[in-house]
Image (tube, rainbow, N blue to C red; front, side, top):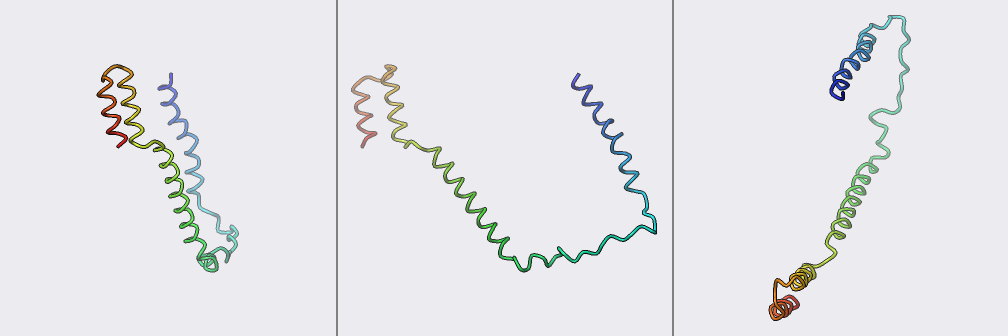
Length: 111
């Protein structure tokens, strides 16, 4: 059903778009009014405000770096030693290591 619908969508769009091509290719009548001549904005309209562009780029770059810093610092809220100690506690609780081995490794991790 979906495949049939997708195959019908492309010809349907072509049928809708084809008249736009014909309209775009029509020549304008010679008596058509000329578009108004605007002198604003032009390539010179930002000369009075030229520092605004670079300042906004710098502000945006600082904002992006600050967001990345806060997002990355939130990911590593535990130190590696805490994680290793949790793993050691889990292994001891499951009975994979005995008490003397647990205490020796715990002493090494805290050192």
